[in-house]
Length: 459
Image 1 (tube, helix red, strand yellow):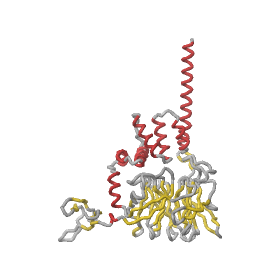
Image 2: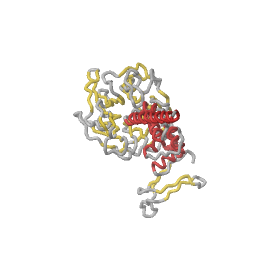
Image 3: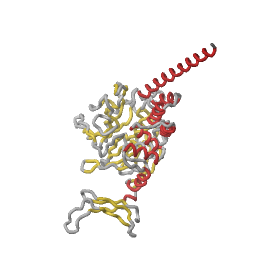
Image 4: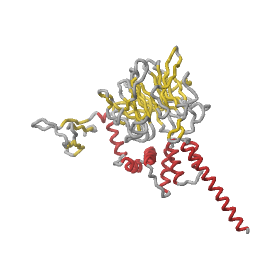
């Protein structure tokens, strides 16, 4: 009888444990679904490490920017004879491997994901010769720094940026940090931020970030999340919107949401052209090429706005295209993780030619890290720029100076024509040889019959 009773107790205890495990998993999966990733991490870590738990734990680490733990967790799935077959999770795994500079393994997953060869080491080597500038980067010294990003100039000496430094604010469930506020500071000549104070008249109980200002300093655009949550795919979401404010008698007032915002998708990261006639932004509105695309909209003289126009597939990708900035010479700078790059969000530039943006160029490894690099702004004349990066594990502000990359000065270019008829010869093979007649490079010319080779000096 004692043996029977013991067996029953064991069965009851086992059933109770299974019930608790399932209940805890169900609760944690609900946290995951509601994007409360920080809390979900702690729960998943204490659950039985099944393939489902490991996959979602890896995703939580990825979304909160802990790429080392994301890569380790994803790899442990395979170590336990599991498989990562979800298309988007393969991409996340590859990105986490890029962040750790495990290029060979990352390339093997990107090959599967993209369906083409992907040689990151060769790309980085070529990038040294193709990027137009080299950058010298230093962190901005910042009193009370926590998570800071998205700096812009209010005037010649004052800047505005977003920060989660206010520890009295509610905690954002996604990353466990306080809600964002806008702050104003004086930028010293040595690159330090001084006299940091909350930006008056704009901050609320919601997130505020990414403030930009018109040339005359009387109009600002910024982000604020929507107070109203809507269900998208059965998930309650508070999307981002762009707001406008006006400076009246020294006070920022007339705060209003822009007309093309929508509760069902995000409109964020505003950037204004020098003449104030065009507003650029990022959005996941329907009809785009990927997760977030870049758009532009006309700012009319009467204060109304035109219809948003997608910047097209030359700029946008199937992933994140964000944080646009349009310089004084109408060069577009933005960040994307949808093109081959160093890892995470990389800063790119695209020049405007005849009203159209040219093929974007990666700014290279002297500024881009294997993590997220974004919110780039620049004074083209002074060659001084500022940007944000989470290369140390948390968002920080950086300053940089640039100088021309001498490797991009050397090139051979021309057009292939028939020597008699002078007709273009598209499809021709052009070979470039050194003085010993050793092949340096070759290419098949296109319909315009032009060739172009970039060279290292003295080759």
